[in-house]
Structures are given as structure tokens and as C-alpha cells.
Image 1 (cartoon, rainbow, N blue to C red):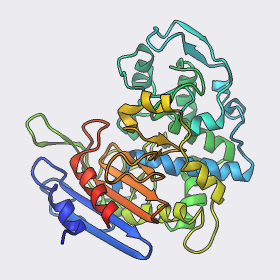
Image 2 (image 1 turned 90 degrees about the vertical axis):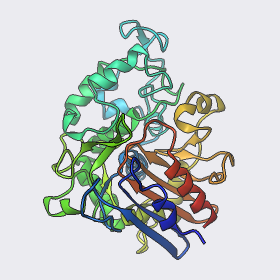
Image 3 (image 1 turned 90 degrees about the horizontal axis):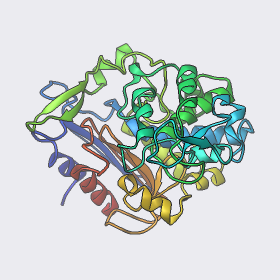
Image 4 (image 1 turned 30 degrees about the vertical axis):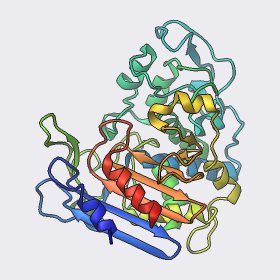
Length: 383
């Protein structure tokens, strides 16, 4: 009988991820496996408490924090964000997606909090990365693979954003990534607290997510992985060492991809979503309605199709994808979660009460999930 350890071990080999840690849970049954090493060729074995850069698994966490503030009354879904982000009070939009950045028109309506949560504010990545309006996102805002020490502090970053034209009118199209970073600035300003402090106080502390944050403390670097990319000759190239970019707090805590975490911390977050916003100790962090909104597809069929490079036919809730059809053996309508470009994945399936978490340290080669992820999902769906 195949075990979770077997699934991971089949992919931890030369040219693949140096190691992996995964968790599959349904009800009270939890299976965890750790395979390989924290660094390529290194001596430290993977363990249940190994720390990983979780990249875009930050997005659903960020969305949950925004919904906490909505429930507090500090934000409202239909409110224009200009109240908190005056830099976006009068945004410009390129006349067509392929227009030069100097050929713009005014936004037809204000950007709202809901636009940011559904990634339909007009900023972000489409399928065509060659469009002129994307150049400032890479060059000025450092969008793309996470590089925490290279990004400007929130106020400076948002000032730059205000000078970048949007690719689409607000509400018109689903675009990837940038809206989650804007959510981080929005949440910090609306709460009056730095984003790391807000997340620690309202989510991580109550959920017992003691190992989750935007940097790894010096005393815990021995539990941290290296971060790799596939090299041109089939080997691995080191992108970031344990004492690298995540070893000190960043100027810009990225709501799109800046967190480090463990399988158990992510499981705690996922359990809260499955419990309709309630922590394991009974504390309510979100209402069931907020969790429902997070995990409901908000896109039109045309928006899903235009975003198919990233979504592969899925919809989008707040901060994560939502399966809208059984397209593959692991797709169950209503499954909510996302993947991270550093080789990570987190999903909850309300219909079955299942949670699946996969953490590796090998960067994805593109938006298409790698074989280890697909095999893991297949195993989790059958568990």
C-alpha cells in the first residue's frame, strides 16, 4: 500500500527537490511525512518542523487578515481603497492591454477592497508577460519570485505603484499577484499596525502558528531550508541560503509571497477555514460568512478563461483558487487553496473535511504544477 512517504520519496532524487515535507488530514486522522534534506547535499534531514519559504501560500493568509478587518468595521468590501491608499485615488489605465505605458485613460470607477480580494483591481500579471504595462511591475515594484530584501518599504512602494498604469479597468479582468501585495499595505494602514504585527496578533497568535512570519529568527536558522531552481544542465542552482534574504525582517512584508511557515502552522490555518473561522480552542477569528466568501468563486467564465495560464480552469475566491469542476482526479468542486512558486501547496476541501499541505524548496519552472504536486494531490484525494 502506497504511503505519503512513498509519494514524496519518488520525487526526491537528483534533479528534483532535495527534500519535502507534507501533511494530509481528514477529520482526526493526520498523516505527515518528511523526506530528504533541508539543503542539497547537506547533512540536516527534513523534519516535521522544518521551515520553508511558502511564497504564494501567503495570499490566502493575507485575504483572511483583510476579512478580519472587514468584520472589525475598519474596512468594507465595497469601499474605495483611496480612503486608505490615496496614491490610488485617481488611477490611470492603459488604453488597451498592449498600449504603451504613456497611452492611458482615467479609471472608469474607483478600486474597491473587493477588487483587491478577487485580484480584479487592474494590477497584476496576465498570460502575456510581454505587454509594455508589465515592465514597471518587474522593474519598479519587484513583482515576480519573492526577493524580500530588494523591495522598497510600503509607503515608497505604494507611491511607485500610484505612478504605474493599470492593465485593465477595475473589475474587468483577473490578474495575478500584485493585488495581494496591495492588500498588505491596505491592511497595515487600515489597522494602524505594521503587517507582521497585525498578522501575529490577529491570526498567528490565536492559531498557535508560532513558526510563521516574514523572517526566520537567528536561533531557528538551523531548521530553515535552502531555496533552489533547476539549472540548465539538470542540476540545482541555489537561489537563497538559510542565512540569506529571509534571515532578517524585510522593509516590505509581502502579502503576496513573503511568509515562512511549517506544515503544522499551515494545517492550523486550514483547520480554521474548515471550521468556519473558528480556532481549535474555540476562539472565533472569522465568521462563517467571511470564510464562505473567501472560498467562493467570484470570477466570470471569461475571466477564468483569460487567467487559465495560472488557474487551469479553476475560479478564484479571496486569495486562493476554487475548483469549479472535477477536471482531474484531485479536483473536487469547492476545494480552496493555492500553490507557491517556491514549490509549495495548501488546500482545504470543505465537502470532505480534508486538508493537504506540501512543502518543497524547489522553485516551480512555470505556472503549471510539477509532477510531485500532482502526485501528492492524487494521493490526498484518495486518502
